[in-house]
Amino acid sequence: MCSVEQKPVFRDLSADDPDPEVTEIESLCMNCHANGITRLLLTRIPYYKNVVIMSFSCEECGYENNEIQPGGAFAEMGIRWKLRVEHPSDLSRQLVKSDYTSIRIPEIDLEIPAQSQKGEVTTVEGVLSRVMTGLVQDQDARKEQHPETAAQIELFLERLHKLRDLEESWQLLLEDISGNCFVENPAAPGRDPRCERTDFKRTRDEDHILGIFTRDEVSENRLLTPADPQTGCYEQLEKDEVLSFATNCPYCNAPAETNMKLTNIPHFKEVVIMATTCDACGHRTNEVKSGGGVEEKGVKFEVKIASRDDFSRDILKSETCSMSIAELELETGGRALGGRFTTAEGLLRATADQLRAAGDAPGLASERLQLFIEKLQEVLDGNRAVTIVLDDPAGNSYVQSLADDPTTPDEGVKITRYERSHEQNEELGLNDMKTEGYEES
Image 1: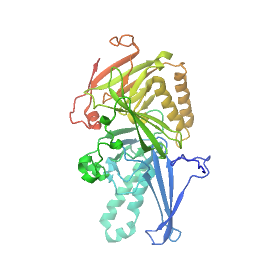
Image 2: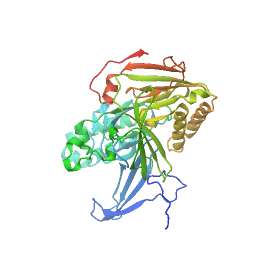
Image 3: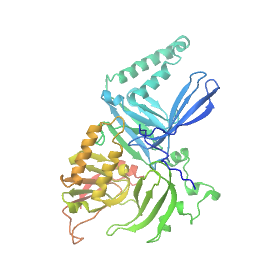
Image 4: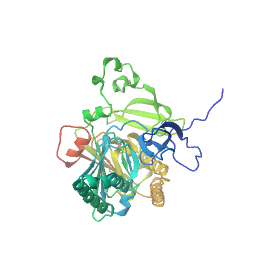
């Protein structure tokens, strides 16, 4: 029996990979109706996800077309980006937009609706250039046939030129119900000073646009039976039982296997732990899902890491929990590391490994990133004390107490429970909107 080395489906672009597996397909040119060539490349964008880059070219008429499609499933939530364009470097920020990304520039009342353009990898300046190119097209004929309309377009083009020349600051707003758009952070791994990201719960109509339906909305012959292990129902899991099912690797999309187990965390609640190991690329995930719903209040933990004993503290970080370390100027969103049940040391090492994996990403200041990783390594070596702040508006995160008596407060952990803000309730898909306010526990 011959064996073939299994490679990841989605691989990083690298000079060490001489065969990036570009697929060429003969296809029809929509401009001259001759046969052209479409090239497909499956690759990964650092700090983003797997994508399929498609490039079409026709030798007969010279027509070319490039677009991008996400290489995985739709995200669980939609995403909004708000970028304040104030510096020339902001114009060169890389953008990834899908077919479902809408773009707005409120200063000039410009809106590009979702599904009006194909997905692409571009820059902030590229968005302006594409709009300007579309407006200039047929402008000569428009001046003869519709001079008033042409004059209005000329005025609008002047405003676009002012934005590109940064004569004044302006905002670029992106919204994508599929969650598959991205704005580059030049300050990574630090917090982006001029860009804000917000996740939101999709409406039922938005789910239908993406082709997502609930079990009650599909026909009876397509309903999953209760015995189907892939329905994802926690009720099927019994204690000490490990459920396995086939899936795809979230890193390279190769076939893999996921193990799922229901675990009871003392003094907290039951959670579902899912672990995936990929034989193709070696990627491993340790994901945690809460077995219950959203808690009545959010929770914030301030965990001091000053000794070796602090590294062994168990931590349950849900996918809605953000993490920050003020001493290192580090801030990560809840979905950056995903949900995981680990230790304080494991959480820091996972952060370092994720940064090392993106260390060769184009557009990043690799020296600054390497310096940050060295500081993080000093923490792991016990040579630098830090405080890890975990903020979970859903209240589904947990930090182990090292006190001998569970009823005695642990001096190494400060716990704050708070009422969620209107925006946090909206992100969690809750209808009960509460005022924001903190309360010490």
